[in-house]
Image (cartoon, rainbow, N blue to C red):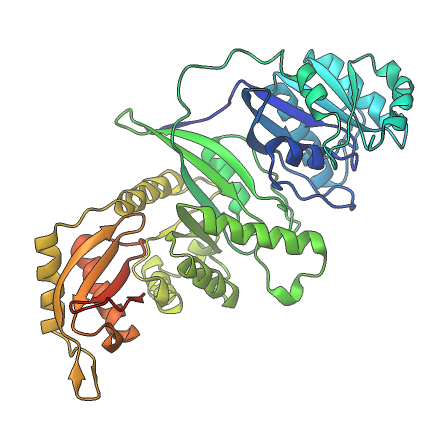
Length: 459
């Protein structure tokens, strides 16, 4: 049976604290990128965000967490608030060193004391970051937080003040770095509309409640990356970076700045992925929004797998998977021969098989096509079609060669690249996909003139 296990780096620094003290700003400062959404609205961060960082010559993982607003694991009627708290507790358990962020301008708050008490019970080494100390005169308020009984450093996450002094206290408790190289991970972005089951799918794969799942649309706001290692039946380890993205709504329904930034991050997740998993709700089927997301995937020339989630709910309706798939292929025709799989993140139906399909698509990304076979297939395609004809001239093919991978790129030498048409290019791509088993993989054609200066035309 196929087994899987999460990747848990030991050199982890967790950032915790009550809401709106600047945890995400400090996270962005440490990773030197704007990965976490920073906003004045309380409770913007909900899931655990993890990213690599390097300070003072040391490499480690840093984790941003949602604001703790519950006292000592108190139960909340707000399911998102409760789930956020559980994510914080999990981050503390994984960490080797913790940064407790407080607001030096607001002074010591009851929740600061509560979080400090929680951290003392955890036994983790803790350093207090007295954030928003933008100017030296704010340092005089340090003594106000002495009852927390942890080492303290005044900092300004927004301006970078005091960060190196903070890290001089945070890094020593980390275990010695491993000599083993970090494995190369296949980056898999899971995208789709809100509430189609993206977070549930990732949690089912990893065997952990790694991402908050809620019936509330828009629960996921940041782009969440989850390192994941799967062991195949043959004993081979496969390494992935799963990327959970915010649900992609219609632009007209996106009103606040946090959600707009979330959608921007989701689009960035597509652009940076090796493979995109487009997830749909079986009961709803492909909508206009799926078509737009699919077009975005095509625009960025990304490999794609479609998962139809909640298939367990559709089974009782009498709908056949074959009929459903045929209709979907009509709706999403411009993605080509993409693999389509019917799954249930709730029951686990076909979840492991979905990764076998993803692995197959990843292998196709690095396909090497023998030049001789490639030319025979293209010549046969030209012979069985009517090549484009314009102003008394017809497109003539001379020879082709593969000029790149990830995704595969083919250069065709012809009499005049300007005679090529999108329809004929689509025909050639279809023939090449079928001949070389390139389902789910974008195929790029580049036309060059066989005479004089090349005239390029890309598809």
